[in-house]
Length: 313
Image (cartoon, rainbow, N blue to C red; front, side, top):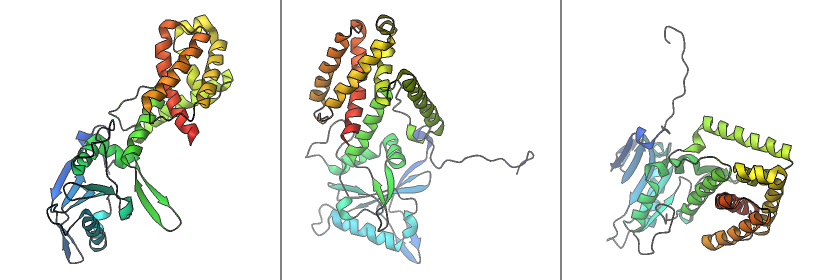
């Protein structure tokens, strides 16, 4: 209570303006005491004082202990020192070579390896799994993105389960978001955790509503307006072709992409090459300005990849 009365504000547990603005701490053999039981998990990862990750390690030289024994040790900790897991996001087990990642409710079959660092390529089969997992998850930006945007709760009728995205899901979703932003004409900033910025979400939602209203005015659906906007950014195209022709191109592009919905995007370069040829053929057919075709093709390609994945679901 101040001189001007009560002051209300929001206090965030994690600073999203920049990972370095948070307090990061990794502790070995941290002592936890609960109900007269003393336990010391091998490694705890704290962010702003919150124990978000528990890591249990086993000696690779000991043939009698495996990462499955580390998993069982975590189950014991859950029973004996439950206070430690009130803020837990991830649980990791390793023998120094193999490594698996899960959540508080994951069974052993759901503890999975993390097989990439940057998300560009999977690590070679002879890689040390623990090294790949640590570098792939604990880069501060990726870690905050993972725990804020890629962990969900699900009620399957028999209880509530906590689920974390696998490595391929994490990187695929982020790539799809990047492509969607680009196709819609938004600048994608890799340094921002956009999923947790209410003001930014509000701005984006407003822009998307504006695109929907513009589509209704032009007689285009949401997929068609996305391609129309990609074509319309070229002023010379608008002047030469006019809005009516651009709408025709947008409709034909959507129809052509829909026919390509079964393209296997895991074979990325082949898929992009097929779509590129198709897009360029349509643009040339309607006389789209040659000097602007490459940029328009790139934007349409990005949107096509996103739409193909959505339509294939």
